[in-house]
Length: 432
Image 1: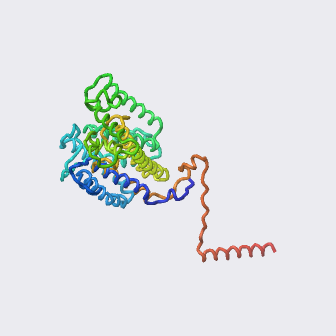
Image 2 (image 1 turned 90 degrees about the horizontal axis):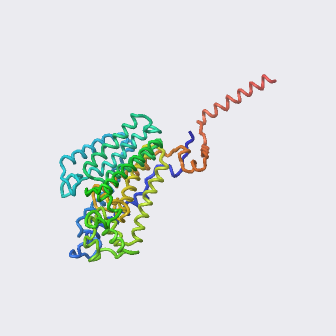
Image 3 (image 1 turned 135 degrees about the vertical axis):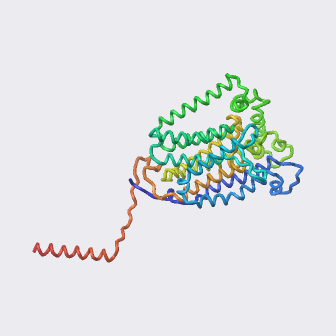
């Protein structure tokens, strides 16, 4: 197998990826402070506006502490995550079980554990990371995973257990994200297309059954109504469609460039959109910075996701490559679903917008995810099969191996020359 090396495959710390993540985090602190702005609290500077907001202050604390998380995760030896993926998976799965047993439901969701200082821990957020590590480990064992019944059962059980436990907590949005992570990792993990097609058909049938039950069966279950209300928000104006309608109006009021930050009487200041500092933070952003600002936010997300896809293409180790794919899938699904539901294009599923929505557990999860990607790129092998590169695949050719000089010990080299001269002398004597 021909191996090549160039600057795209070399180990490095990807500062560009980290810069994109922190640009979003810093803007998130601002957006949360705008969403929770109280005109009664006098402030003459941006810092005071942030300090006057309880949620904005806590989010700022999480952001300030996050470099320590990045440093710690990147410093851990790369093989550690492959070796101890099962241990992390089991620990978080136990936390999911504990939450079901001891936690108190908040808006019909039993997903949080109280950890003190009024802070809550959401284990389902960390379950996404352990699911990524576990799946990457299982899929990397062979080039053709799910090629045997044993492999199918292992991957199926490891995928289903955290999803079922999270579904039991009524966290529908997180369940959909987990299912999406599994699907995309199977696609990129080399699973046979027949399995992918079968899973796709089953997923389509399940989604169709849910919508049929909600629409044709005229269900009154609030969780079902939240899923189908985006089809006709006006029909559910007094219940499940309320958030969608108000969110669309808030974003529309921002116009091209927005009405600005910390404006008394704005929709965000009047709490016109429920949860506009968490799940519906994009409505606050749309009102404050308008279409131009929203487009820039989407562009940064796009660069972040494309950067991870690029890094995965030039990572030879399958485990590391799938870890990057898993983190990319997690962020992509969160961004797509959150922004789409805020615009009324997708069902309301109650998931935060990465790096922007308020929430310590979600922010830590996203920071650890980015740190795992940085760990992979920093510790990956610099050598990579030529056929694994996009350029080689597109061109249908194999790269030539760069010629390298061969250095031989000088004493051995001189001895070799003497033996050659002696053999030549004997040959000349026989000829004579």
